[in-house]
Image (cartoon, rainbow, N blue to C red; front, side, top):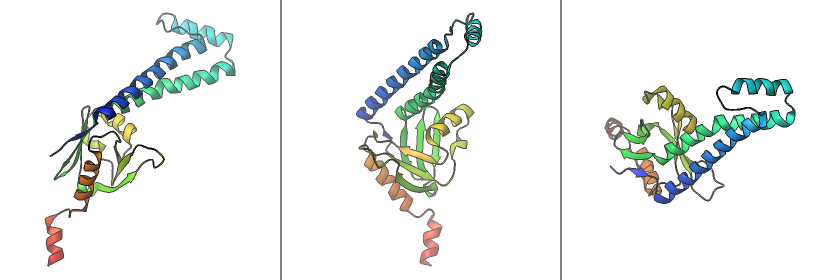
Length: 192
């Protein structure tokens, strides 16, 4: 059984995106404190926040602070998604498609694959996703990993990344296995 992982170019691109996300996150944390005029010192945080509220916050402070707060919360989820992409491994097997990444081990049976579709037709890089008949994330026993995996991929979808090495071979293997009869009993009944 062959395992498909990101190519060297795909890893480089993911690494660049990861560094950019970390820089955006650091900027958001720094800007949030500067916008609200608060200190991150644990002993000065509450008094500085009280003083800032007492001085009054204008729209020019509230709107950028809310934007930075959204970035502070959302960027770690993006970082997780990029790290999970970095470690993603797909293995077509007789029982289904095995997906592994950072403690996440999932098996998608071949009959569960409803469709393979292009996720974004407007890009130069191909990006497909498997549409599944239901949510298979309950296979992940750790609730935190299950939540992170779901927020990154969705409940009934699995992306096939553009940067995968021999990506076309993986898609061909998935299509081939999805067209194969699910059980030998079904083919025997058809011939009888």
